[in-house]
Length: 281
Image (cartoon, rainbow, N blue to C red; front, side):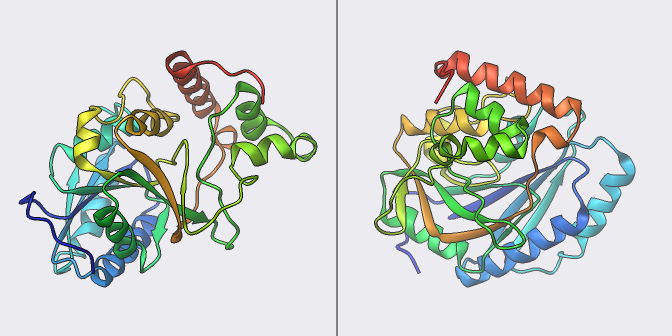
């Protein structure tokens, strides 16, 4: 379905997922969707590396039992890693990618489901567009509403507004949110350049990912995907494809408790210190 390459004697695709007490029904739905998408792409075998950061023996046993039910799956080989320490989301994916090699790598959250065509379409685009180093999908909620995963460069104001503001203030500042979520931009064709991609689902060209040394592990959670996007942009194009669809069950940091709020603030501060502060807009 896409041109083969003689330059790399490696698989076309590998996949990684980082878990932290992730609901097993969501992980099963992700794996089922991945198998369907890999089959539709006519790939012989794809390796999925699951990194469990829960540090919980009972949860790890449940994950092993779930993965064992896919032992006979031809399209997908699943490997479960359980590091002794939880060093963060980006570190988990870096750890997974140290286990496999591939031309392209799919970074996923466990709360994502792929459309059946997603893998075939993404690999086709990456194989024919050598300038693209990171490819993002169009995301939808379980109810079918757009998620607007791609983002413009943020300001401190718009991050606080989106994460913590009450609904009435968000409505009054809808223009700022639309610009941040890139809803104000017209689009010709399915591909468009974006500034920042969501780490819930991104296809990366492995050579470019390795060139920038992967995720910055100084981020524990939040903004490591934005940081990676800007690093990858120094290697080539960051694009979103409107015809590559995923379903995403993501939630707001402010609703996940104080730890997530602190990780969000810490990640934002590190991001702005590296890439430049923007207070308003």
